[in-house]
Length: 218
Image (cartoon, rainbow, N blue to C red; front, top):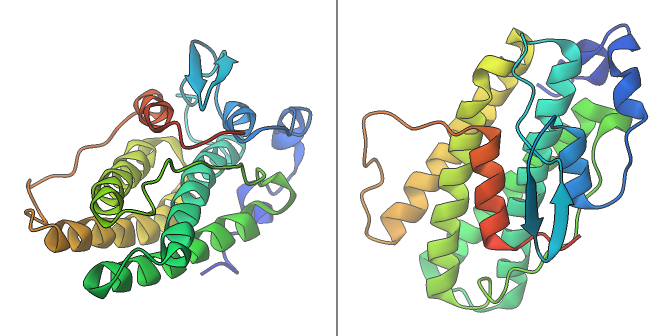
């Protein structure tokens, strides 16, 4: 699929991302800021960020696709690193370790897919501190549930903000994220499908959830 989702498809003329090019490439959260517009101040990992608000709510466009894809890439970086560290840490075993290994590969593939689509417009990978959640099976399990549920809600929340080509690509990712969420819930002996409909969350709600973790440090 990645050969069909490229920056050329997202922004065939190139003109619609000129303003995007001028924005700074520094911390992970400033990268998030580049994909967002207007409002608010939050603190993430001890770093205070001003003017970090919600994604554009204008009609879908190629330039907005770039912003949404970078927003998704931010979350995929976080998930991929979380599972990478959990597998490398050696604290997991059995079904939990199997889950972590499979999902690690999936999240790494999602990162690669989005980076390939964005090309030079892809945000850089931030630094992380998972605060011991990758070194304790119970904490890992609880955190994985939160991350997977958040990922599903984030993708669902941006469905109306992207063009049809991007929506189709995003759907192929969010369905897998939902499988992850169901799998880890089953491992935790929780209902893997607790509701008939999955909720969506706005970018502001997702940013608040990311802030609450304190996992992104720069």
